[in-house]
Image (tube, rainbow, N blue to C red; front, side, top):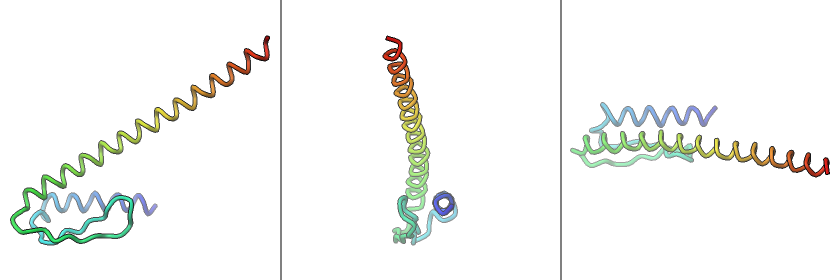
Length: 96
């Protein structure tokens, strides 16, 4: 439950800093892999650069999720294939 809410908070912070918070001088982050916030001072006049940076970070998080789900699928299929081979091998050796 906490992990889900932490992910939602990260998304909301990214949305905020990509829109009305783009010109804020202090940026609050909630780094992945931790439940502690981090504050960073941002030089003024970098609103557009921050907006682009945060949009890119969101895109990478989405592609990272896609990569993880792809890896999970490959591992699951490998386990199924190994099980089928083990059963077939056992079946063949018992019928000899």
